[in-house]
Amino acid sequence: MLIVESHTDVSTTHGGDMRIFLFTPSIPNYPKAKFPGVVVFSEIYQGRPILSSPNSHTRLVTLVPYRPVFSLMPPSHIGVLAHLAMPIVTGPVQRFARQIAGHGHIVAAPSSYHGFTGPEALAYDGPGTDKGNAWKIEKKVASYDEDATLSIDTLLGLPNCNGRIGATGMCLGGHLAFRCAFDRRVLASVCYFATDIHSATLGEGQKDDSLQRVKDIKGETAMIFGKRDNHVPPAGRDAIRQALHNANVTFSFYELAWAQHAFIRDELSKGRYDPALAGICFQVLLEMFGRTLSGNLGPREGDGGEVEDVC
Image (cartoon, rainbow, N blue to C red):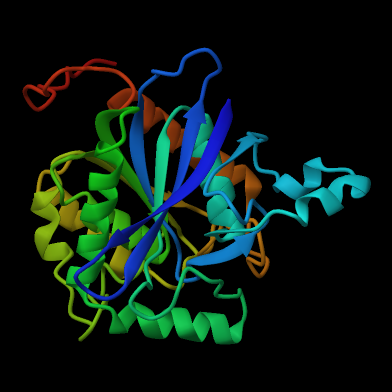
């Protein structure tokens, strides 16, 4: 499926305009096709520039699963891309967003640090990590929540959105997708190795209320962790799972035996990227979003009923 990539800048009340990167499915000869929307939250590294048009906010690409766009071009054609330039999310998040869009979802990827910097790169290195971790706890939780609300509003304001919204993200973005699900308009969320939920240390003052607000999740959610993730220890994962149980949230909880933190990041993951497990988890996402967002099931009724005790 073809994808149109663009961006829009949205005013915020917490500092600066927020850039939202949009990845939109495009089906030839179906200009009025409608798709569900998905908010994709990045890890702490936010955005960086890649090649696109300096005079345009859109471009058209063709989806190729889990491969950088540059690998599709023979060396003799690389110079053509040098005439193009547009700020975009990090490479791994860009490819993740394209995959979701290529399966029939409009993706909105907000830049988180608009109160501190532009949508420029935070490199996958020591200084970039330090900046991301510092800004993560300097930014107000209310600002994160406003970002989520504005991203949903943006999707719902698009004429080709069918009005059904999901959310996903990894690391910091996993936590932000979790909080995004507090909005009743979010019907499904998939949170990859979400940090700081268990410790309630997101945002200014490092005292968020995410676990206390679990009951606000009215859609379905999936939490995905590696059992070797040292950013979210076993007791922390247990606390999240128990809170979801206590709040009677409809959820799935996955702990992968050999996965570490950032195991889906296919660039500079410091030896942690596991493509097989990343692919399996992406199928979890596609199943949930396909079931909850792509069709028109009508309002949910009941709690699923009793499970029959049969062999």
